[in-house]
Image 1 (cartoon, rainbow over the protein chains, first blue to last red):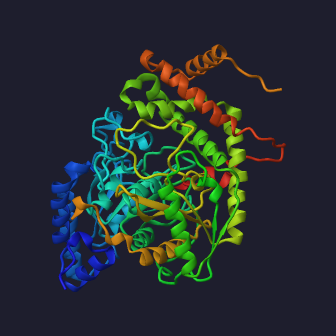
Image 2 (cartoon, one colour):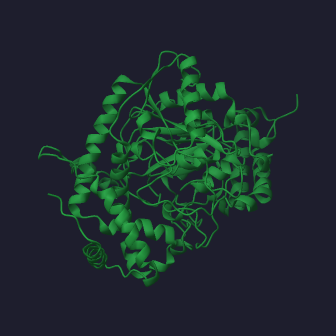
Image 3 (tube, rainbow over the protein chains, first blue to last red):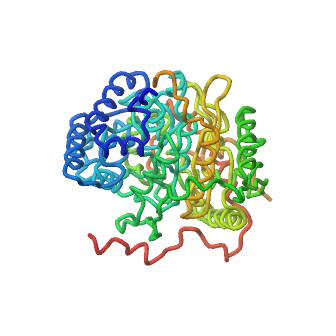
Length: 466
Length: 73
């Protein structure tokens, strides 16, 4: 049997080879850098490739292996960061003209952890400007393109993270998620993307979009790689005001436990008649639910508050907090923002004090409703994106519409992930979303692992990745 | 009874709120931003359900949270 190409190795498979001496981190890193040189010009996933840093990290990892040191699964494994994660001495642009030369003095908490565990930083990835807006052509860097068809968008805002993982440039890339910015690009690019519970992963050193909705989490090619990453980055950080003092368990410990007996609720009313929902998405969701039932889960329709309430609550809080962060620049440098960023974020100026208080009162009600439902169910299964990826040049939707139904779990803080369910007739990925109880990422990863093993969908890569 | 605002009063509201936030919206963006404002206004209206005084907000001031990290500074 022929050996799998290096970019196809999972973190566990690569780690096994690194530890038995049949592979060096230097070889793994040079292969990744060569793939970036060859493939990235078509997809624009990277803003900055940190070649020298990557080679130094790889050399350090190989030296550590030679000394018998083992700092964990990331030792010697390449990764990349959305370009809103601070990296000391490496520019962190937020994909914006306003921060194009910004050199942070310190690493973000996530980068501190991955670096300390021997990871290899390949570079910084494209995002929608300041993690909002859409694919824009009026910024210093081009928008990332979907590896399955480069005429199509990746989703966002962790656009480069989705593109880089799907194209096999990196096994894992960090994203952030304020209204769906991990799960959206994961869905449209056909990767795994998990937004952990609010407070599970430190956001220190990540440029904020909206303080009370921001989450950090990984996009990865497999459920196992996502779980390994969470193990590496989760934990309390007293310097992140939103960080939770919750115990951290092994997120991968139950990946092979199957779904027999688990109860999964489906809030079908969220998506079934939503504007713009694709019949292909609906069929794939039904098929996925059926697969989980055949694997032994109890799958039942459930009723939550209307989806529009979650969306309204989240958008009002997000735009208001974001506007407060950027108000001075909107006053003094409005034309330095992309039009799509400007037109959305400025809506925060039109929220009154009572509007924001009502949003936070509604937020408590919605969180209570989902938490209560999750006393009867182990997880919820719903749509992530309502349709396959749009053309990258497609006109942006109105602020009252969204092609992604991920906001509910930013509002409520529950963990949620996106996993592929198949492909559209045009060959673009389809997906579903699984959400679980607060601090129970392990259960949704377990369900996703069972589905992934059954579907085998992560054995297919975009043509340009081969 | 709900007050139905006409376009002229909505435009005045839009201009007043923009000015109050110190925004000078570029001329070629004003119509687009006004239309976005009208769309967003519908989103905001969804928040105003009936609630009494017991419905506390989700971002209640917590002394533990606002003092966290100070010993590290």
